[in-house]
Length: 200
Image 1 (cartoon, one colour):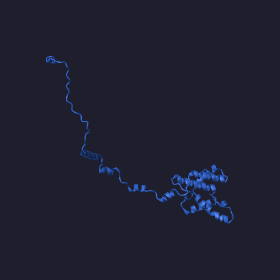
Image 2 (image 1 turned 135 degrees about the vertical axis):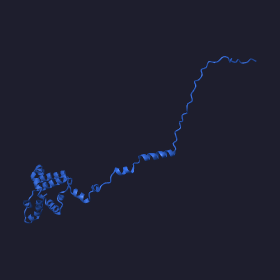
Image 3 (image 1 turned 90 degrees about the vertical axis):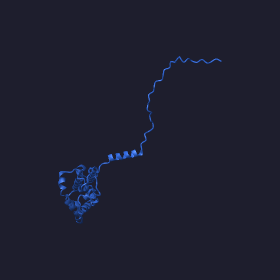
Image 4 (image 1 turned 90 degrees about the horizontal axis):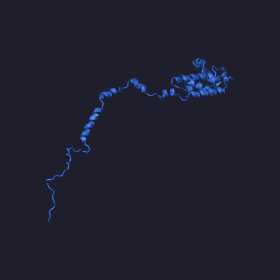
């Protein structure tokens, strides 16, 4: 029986050795677990940093004075009704009505609505004249006369004087109606008389 040949131990094989690997710390891919107690401590410290001091809260907004409180009180119903009286008509609509009135009675609409210096002077005293014109209607008709013959103001003068007064209130931010130009019952009653009889 023949034996298998064995390589001689005196001969060495030329094989390169693998490089030496240095020791490396293993990487932990697992997420870091934060203890609940640590979360509570962090939240508590954060709240302490954000929370303002009592002194800041007090000084940040001062208490309103009595005078400031009065200004914040809303207007009463009486004040609102005085400022925006029932029956108020905007300026554009009033001017359109004046022009229609001029055409109705055969007058020039442009001249009818044009306010002159004479009109502005008349507006200072027109109230008493209008009251007298309203009261003369019944007396004149009882005698069979035309009331307009005894009136101190023409139809245009009445309307223009009232328009001037209305614009004065509007410029002051207190628009009113014809019947509320003056705050008395006599004015309202006589304005109604003039309107009902076609003199306004």
